[in-house]
Image (cartoon, rainbow, N blue to C red; front, side, top):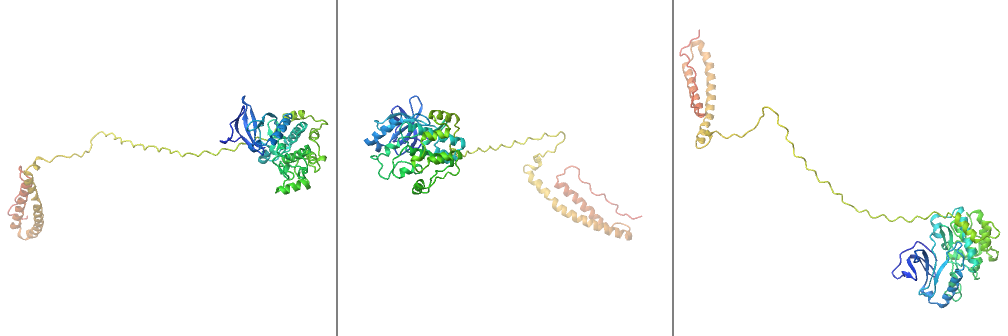
Length: 431
């Protein structure tokens, strides 16, 4: 059963089981569903609920009860110990310690192979967990990267012993079927032999090789190819730390009898004849650094709301300020009323009199033209006669007098009359 970040609960999923509040779903497996729960005091736990189809089989429940009872005897060295179990409830469930951290499978998939110090800590931690599990007389049966969690204090092995209830002869599996992950199944299991503690050691070698290289040592493109490599080919350990290659090669032996036990693996890793799992677990917790935390995916950016920016109101142009008036004389245009002479019935009479100026001007211009001609002729005649020609002189004087009277009458002059030209002497001889 794998664990991931807790997801939301669906409508048909329980919210409370016994004294535990369910906060979210961590994952699903072949046996059931695992939830993130909380005890009454707030401590977080993992609650594993058995599927309803399996919960209805009495034989399964009996085997499962035996495995849970045995799992409770496992020391907590590098494991997630069983805290509680209610197998007579509907649905039945077990409660284990909640391990906060990514699985080895997720860490390698997202960050690549573990560096040297963390790889050694992982190898020692998983070997310590197997030594504790085997010491309680249990076989894990499904050790794989997804069942190894990388906590802040070191690697933790989960789901130990649970697979046996599913893999019993009278269980839901049949001939040719088994519970496990293809890349981590021991060759003897593929040959139909029973799963033993040596099979867990083989899986340990595959897990360490995966953590150190980023790939399973017998991985093939298909399940059949993977099984063939497990049964007949040497493991692919290229890139694995040389300090671990020898012990991993021994754990991946085709012959289960040639493999070291979990305690022997731990002894060879820590360099002591009789390695103590408790002391090894304490050493790991003090020196374990673990992989860098996997960053949470960045949330999608919120849609940017287009806010209409109010346009500034047009500022009215200021009223023109009149320039100060200069001192001194000014030119001002003023509409003046017509004089009294231009008002009333007399207005038309006065206008008619003014019109007489037009023909007068025409006549006057004509007379002046004749006067010029007369003067020219007079200056031509005087040298021969000794005087002005009388007819021409009288004509000029008469025209001048008539012109003066017409102009005076047109402009309404009632005062002094325009004087006529002086009368020239009637007889004037040149000296």
